[in-house]
Amino acid sequence: MPRNLTDSECKDIIRRLGKRLNVDPSLITTRLMSADDKQDMREGNLPVKSLEVHIRIWMNNGMPDYAHGKTIPLKHEAEEVLI
Image (cartoon, rainbow, N blue to C red; front, side, top):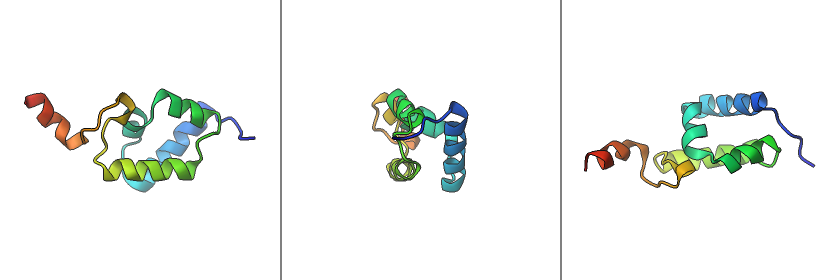
């Protein structure tokens, strides 16, 4: 059975992954991870290696706001607003 993680432990993991992958950790928590993903992490049901792979894929796709159901890459969001 997985071990529950504290919010502090989750934040530390996300900070370390952000630093390793050269991405702002706040983008991971606001654009990639849904509320369910965060809860899964707290409950120990989101392995760090799995999260890392998902972050890499998300970055390769242009860091869209998947947490809110959007698929437009971050760099193109400003263009969408102007159109």
